[in-house]
Amino acid sequence: MTPERTVIRDALTDVPAGTVVTVAGWVRTVRTSKGGFSFVQVNDGSCLANLQVVADKELPNYDSEVVHLTAGTSVTATGKLVESPAKGQSVELHAEDLAVVGPADGEAYPIQPKRHSFEFLRSQAHLRPRTNTFGAVARVRSEVSGMIHEFFRSRGFVQVHTPIITASDCEGAGALFRLAADNREEGEDAEREFFGRPTYLTVSGQLEAETYACALGKVYTFGPTFRAENSNTPRHLAEFWMVEPEMAFCDLAGDADLAEDFLKFIFAGVLERCREDMEFFNTRIDKTLIETLTHVAETPFFRVGYTEAVEILSAADRKWEYPPRWGADLQTEHERYLTEEKFSGPVVVTDYPAEIKPFYMRINDDKRTVAAMDVLVPRIGEIIGGSQREERPEVLTERMSQAGLNPDEYWWYLDLRRYGTVPHAGFGLGLERCLQFITGLGNIRDVIPFPRTPRSAEF
Ligand code: ATP
Ligand code: MN
Image 1 (spheres, rainbow, N blue to C red):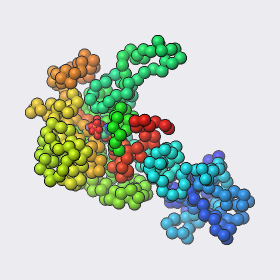
Image 2: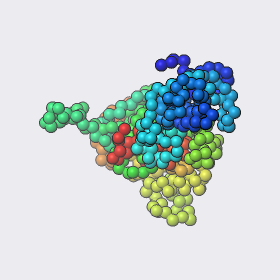
Image 3: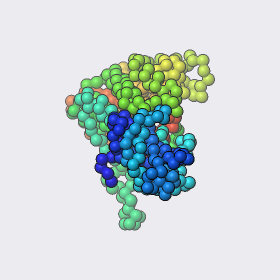
Image 4: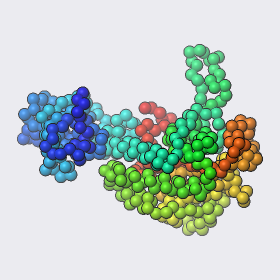
């Protein structure tokens, strides 16, 4: 195929009118006028906008192919870019050649030029990136992913690839997927633990990241994470991507500051770099999106202790499905009240009761709470969960035993405290929660290409 292809984003913005270019993409719509002209909207995924290709009856394949073009057909078009008289587009391409690369059965093609429900499009996960919404989600996701690396690397964090297969089974972060080798050919008898011990898909790279933080100072890990959550909620996936920075010589306040800087960098960055896609989400998904993101990127995040948060919630004039109670985890309704009504912006809630948090979080002096933080944002609730880690070996051992874990199995984790222990802290951001906040999409299944949820892993 022609290597000198121009992507439509460049054709629409960078290339001077009058230039002859070749573009390649998929037909979105075709309109044929009686005067012997066809207007073909071509999209190649490089940007939201289509390029209008104008084809006239002089083309040798006009009657045989052009007038029969349907949505979904792949084409190449060569011709001059001409300033467009039509509203809402800078240039159009006057085709000297318009070739069908791969036809599409127009009637059967599932992605018709109309609005489909997101639910329907989930059943067409292989074709949904050809729609405006899912093309935009894919571009924004890629940009955010790149900015995550940019943010941490520019601050001297070293990226660590933590394992996806792990034997640390009991972090309390979520239900686990257990691994088994597929020994069907060898017969049932061959069943054994491949790794000589039970292993699982990771629920978090944190414990491993801690080991590298306690050597390299500042590290982060960014990769897929698995939780066998049986909850069919719009905010939970069985497979999602998590960003986990970990910093040695850092306490909870430093951790919260990093989380705030990080989110602001991402939100400001996406507004600047994904303008067209963000305007699309703002128009089609949530009219307050850009305003909210701009506000969040510019204003300080509130900090409030868990105990005070429970007092605020208890005092609120509001009927709760789960009445707030000290010692119980905050529910989404509580989190949303705090961010949407009480503080009208992101809130960092700190110092949760020890019983509801995992063993590795540092016990505060009051002995009842731990140095934990959740960052809450409007609409979503929790977007980040983090903590200062317990660095005192005796306290950590005791916490493990209380949690029903065998400290011997975590000997390597305890070694970090035995040899040159340091205060350290980190957090986990769910990439999809972050993308929900950025795009305004209500269901987490729409911000990951191939969502994995209970009874759903078709593609
Ligand atoms: P939640 O209470 O919302 O279920 P969690 O407290 O179990 O989340 P953490 O263990 O703190 O989550 O994980 C860190 C971050 O990972 C969360 O703040 C969230 O952004 C994201 N996350 C957690 N579970 C899921 C999931 N099942 N699907 C998508 N993202 C998730
Ligand atoms: Mn959490």
